[in-house]
Length: 158
Image (cartoon, rainbow, N blue to C red; front, side):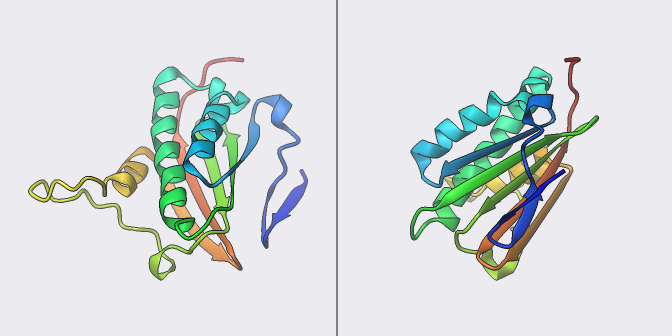
């Protein structure tokens, strides 16, 4: 397994993509590109092997994460987003990297459900991300944000 260095953060190379367990999807960090990048991710070998209900959960989770990167990390400019998908026997592992602004105070948002009386237009993203995943981690190394997410899922044979 070969490691690739992206701005000081090493991740596994996607050379195993043909085996169906790995995929690397890169996209510019703007809303139009994120839509097409999400479509490419959903068409990747690892996600095609998931049951439909798990694919839908991954789609919601990725849409929230990628849109947050565009709206917050790249709010003052554009850059690249790298998405590594790795399918394991009982879970899907995602690594998402960008060179945008760091998370506030260098930490993940808590993801609490907003108060019902406030009824904000937004603010549900991190609640959804945390609800759909089993593990979420964040680190900043140099200029690179790295978000690691795992979610339990089932897959069909193939």
